[in-house]
Structures are given as structure tokens and as C-alpha cells.
Image (cartoon, rainbow, N blue to C red; front, side):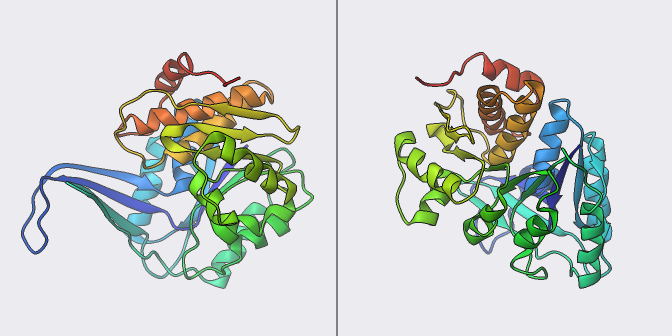
Length: 305
């Protein structure tokens, strides 16, 4: 089974406003409400691609119930922990002449809530996949990622990590199955600027040397790079699409990679291409990638020589 873990899920309220003016009454011309959070996006795209997953994380209050209802509407299984204090955050995303976001704080997560999460994670079995992604709310320990990977170390659970900076580098010693930085995040780790796929390869390999088994680097409109545990290097250009919305593109790439990997019984080229197609399909839509959209883009992309 695939499990996704989102520490601070949200209700995303996405509005369109023509020529937003600060200090004035502005009226929307479009509105949308979606469950938000990187792990939730992975679960939704997996469901769209025909793969079951269980969404884990912390919820609270009326917004928490709304998030769970909407996840189930997408066909996702859920096993959330409801905490007592506060409510799950509401994130406002405004599309106008410029894109603006105001992100909520989220509920208070206690030591008892963390222990409940550990009890759920202890039930994972050999061969299960756990996707951990996104930021850490200020009510959780800063080394939460590291604590989880240490707890699951040696249990033959395939762990995927999509996080920035030290959240990512501190867990490499536990040999996660897959990590997915973008090229900016990869550059920040090593204090370099990475502009091309050729620039990315040696630094992706450095992350492998530090412990990651497979490194998938997203590069937006410049495509993606995968360096595998067998030393294979796959590079691919992004499909030619009209960019509509970049939110969730990286999460969609993770979901597509896992779907392609499972459907091909471990073929990394298939996983890479499906991941690329899923990320691009979400970028070309106001919604997250669907199976028909991914399959259509798969006909247009290939691995570069």
C-alpha cells in the first residue's frame, strides 16, 4: 500500500480577481475550494491514475472535516489524526495581475498526537511505500522527518521524501528510495546555480553518494533528470504545453513516477516518463493530472539520448 503523510493539510481557497487593488473592495470572478498539501496532492493524482493510497496527517475543526470529505470525494482513503486545539488552516491563493498567497497557521499538534502518528506508522509493512512531503508546522519538532525515517529504518519500507534543505539532507543517511528536489533546491544545498540538465547530473549524484537511492530532479519548463540507484541517468525535455497553474506539479510528478514504477514492475525509464507527463498535465490544467491527460502527454515525450 502507498501512504502519504501531510503534516499541515489545508483548505485551499483559490480566487480570481481582476486587477487587485490593496485597500479597496475587490470582487472575485472565479472561486474554487480544494484540499491542499503536498502529500494530499500525491494521493489525489495517484487516485486519478488508478492507484490506491492512504492519506495520513493531522486535521482539526470544521476545516479538517472538509478536507477529509473532499479527499474521499477524490476516491482517496484517509486515516487522519484529529487534534483538539485549533482548526486546519485555510490558504488563500489569489490569481490577479500577480499571484498572491496567504497561508494559514494550522492547529496545535501535541506530543500525544505525534505518538498517535507513530502508532499508525508502526503498522506499515515490508514493501509498503510512504511519501513524506512538505514543510513542518511550528508545533512539530524540526527534526520530524529524521525521527520518522529513523523509526522505520531497516523495515524494508520504501520511503519517498520531497522536502527542502536540511529536512532533506538530514534523512539521506537512512537511504530513502526516492527524493525529489527541484533544480533550485538542489542548487541551494550545494550553493551553486544549476541552469541545465547537464549541470544537474553531478549534484544529483552527490545526493546519491550521501545516501539517496534514486534522485528525481524537476526543472519546470526545462524538463527533468533522474539518477537511479543502478547509476542510470535519464534526461527529458518538458512537453510543449501552455502553463496554467504550477501548484501541485512536483507532487504530480512524484505520483506519476510511483504509478509508472509500479505498473512497469520497476522500470525506471517508464517511471521517469510517467512522472514527467503527470507533472506537465497538472501544469496545463486548473486541476491535478488525470489518467487521460497523462496518457496523451506520454505519446509526446521520450528520454533524451
